[in-house]
Length: 295
Image (tube, rainbow, N blue to C red; front, top):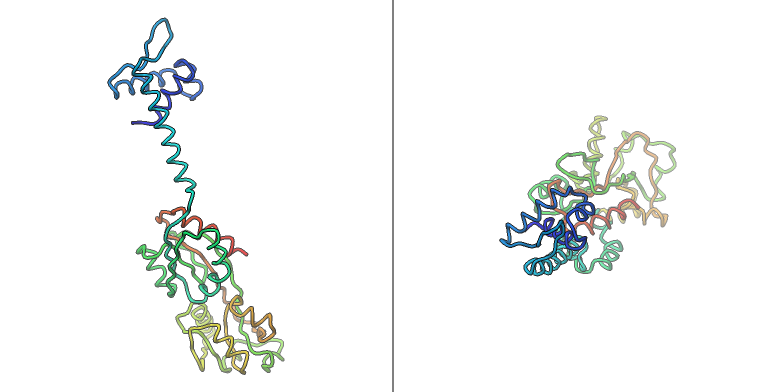
């Protein structure tokens, strides 16, 4: 049964006529008449007595009016519950790198948890290519990338932020006495880097290849915080996004090196597949972390 037809029937009853109902609903009078005939045909009854250009409800019409109001009220309540559920709950599957996980799932997650205690999150740590594969297969709902800026019509960017990235060393490293250092000169130093398939390491390798040079690190390791700890106590150097090194930098344990010819752009992006249905829980997560990423 068409709820719009029920709305028209109720309007005819409330405004005591087809013309008045048509004016209030923005219909023509013929449209109102047609909908009432449709409803009478569907219910196999007569809803109005019609005489001398006046109408009055039949006994069946009175019964239908009572049920129509209940149906419309329940219909509106259903739509309202779908729009703004009293409790937002559900499961969300996320994929991201360990660096991004360390960044966004500390105090920010605790704040999110306060607002949405009934949303359950499952985080999978992975590389960028694997993340997109999982997103295409609907194995995860959202991905956080830390990579080059990604444009792809298959995915929607929910939020993004460009990240600063630097070479860095301990505060007593002799390289800090120089005003400018070339990338070629820097390559002779002892490096500690993340694995070569890590996003920002991969971008650095691309820049090195463009200049026909390469770095042979003395250590490759996946934990960027461990890299920071090693660098602050040695003469070795590394290359990481600033959000990873900021605590060490702010405490004066490391400094950025003045490398003048390395143009690497790294972006944090929160992406969803264009065909993914966004539940209230998913919308809540996106809205919350959109503000976090833009800080």
